[in-house]
Image (cartoon, rainbow, N blue to C red; front, side):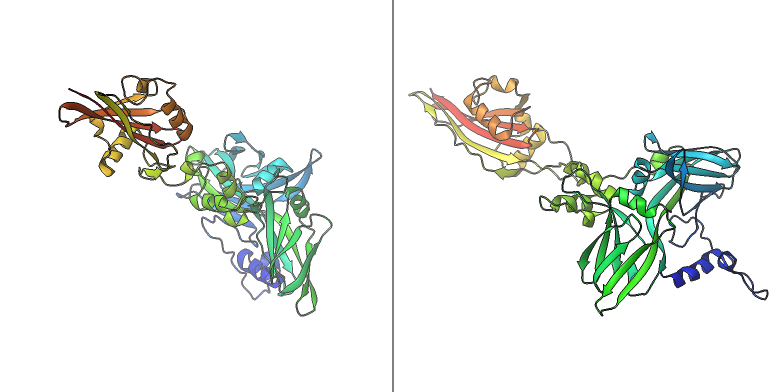
Length: 457
């Protein structure tokens, strides 16, 4: 926003008396305030939130100020309520965070130390504050505060456009030891763009013919916002050959505010989970990718870096996808009056993220219904690894070579097994078909076995 627009916005939002004097014949402009404001524009000096019944009102100065306290640089944000305050406490989920203090009957402040506390807040983590009051009902309520770096006080020509937002994004360094980057944007039809300041200068990169990015790691962005009275200067060598300058100040602002009288603020503002679109974007990037800013904000991407697919993606109905099995069935064994043979071995995979738990019964039921290659589940017996080597025609012992081959293919571990048999009509003989199904929960693989045996009368 240019300086002339800033002056106009100031007049509209704060009243002319806040920005300059009025003539005696003119009525002052009445300040315009929106009830239930949850986000603040760059020109807003306060941000407001109201409890739905109107019992509690809360506001914050949007501009945080840096001070030196106890020989340390700290950011101070100040709030005001419509009730007399007895106590305040600032925290993030499961941990006290910052220092909140009552400074007068209806005013309080939250102090964040430079370093870990400030960086954490600027990275997008909301700060929670409990507020206890002497009056009103209830006497305790909670606030959620969002802080972010923002540019304002723009002065210069329209040929350079510095965007207000500086957003936290997920960009790894080459060593893989750091991922939080603060990124701004400048639009200008220019052959080059440089930024100068006493300190806190960003890294400038060209994106396309008229777009540049501004990148800071935390130490540099802190230098850029503290003190916030010193502007950064943007110098563009325009395509026309002219060289122009623009200045803007980078500050820390309260950009979001919410209020709740719920007894549990974690229910009101639960920690967001990894979103499917962000997860898919993150995992679709080629190996070696460092910049994941196109997938979402820093914290949106961070939530997905260690999330499993089944925590994020919708569950899939049970299906059995046939996969190649590397072994052939062993040769049949026969004598003059008895015979035995393994007819076939089929292998399948189950969904990576099943909608309902996969069990040996659901697997057998699915095979029976879709392939008719096994008997109904109730016609057989379910067992586990220890029981599957007893009284069946497939494995003679726990060290059976066939079982060892199946374990190697399916990954070993626990086994849910099912075995059944049926008599097959045979002239002057007895003939039986045996069925076995093994489900390996650790790998999600299924092995289907079929054999036969018989003897003459």
